[in-house]
Length: 121
Image (cartoon, rainbow, N blue to C red; front, side, top):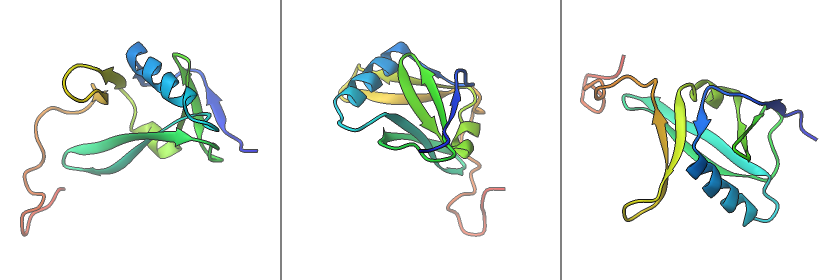
């Protein structure tokens, strides 16, 4: 058994549309207890968010229940979720989950990434 830390509040939100979709997806998967939120890299454009199903929580996961969905988040990712709203947009050609980060600074990247002799500071 893992020693998952249960939390009832978080510095991020899950919209009712996203919670409804996540709940439906989890219900259709055998052996799944919730959804893992994770981040990939951090560069000029900020972090990239992702989600996957959880069959067994990791020992250092935080479990947060929002709108009826069990979310599992490692400590590093939890620090990147402040001010984030997870939403589901059904309009357009491809319905998708969207991570809206109200805390992210506006403006583009640093301009030096990918060019020779320059990089992000």
